[in-house]
Length: 191
Image 1 (spheres, rainbow, N blue to C red):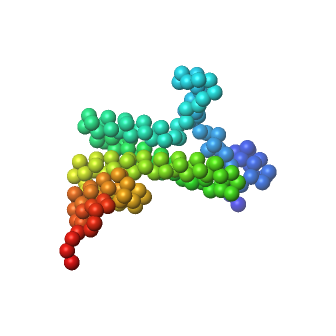
Image 2: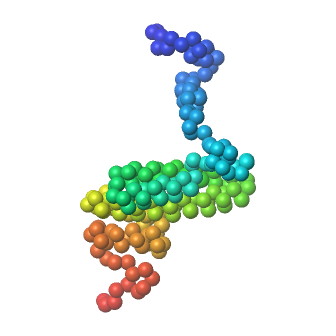
Image 3: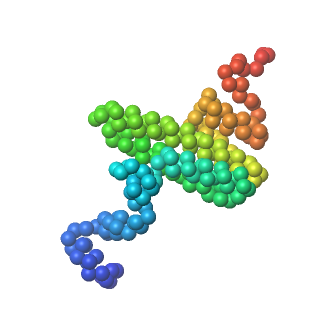
């Protein structure tokens, strides 16, 4: 059999029972750039002992604010990039909160409650992100790209929420839906 790898270290790890996926995972973990490590408190002027978390809802909100500023100055490409980043990070956060919540169910009720609350907050910010992205696509005359985002908002937030109502109204304005939602009022009159 032909040797695929000529690294003595790799050969040694394989002889010791390491699998190629484990070696690859370890290599990737060791190769993570230092920029991905959390900032120390003294580097950002915070009290000693606190750490800036790059994977947080505050980071998502910061991306949204930067996206809003880019959209306001007419840089729609940059706004879309920032909104996409905010959307991706929101979705990752939702998964993390869900996983932690599930891991602690039945062990310590406080942790799932906290993770569920953070998940709800993140879901609301994700809906706001989708609304901003949809508005951007509508502004660029691309309603076909906006529709899936708006439908997702209605689905996850329900039409009763402010975000859900806004999303459904935008779907009516686009022409995807034709029946207006009256939000708590009795449905149209006659038989």
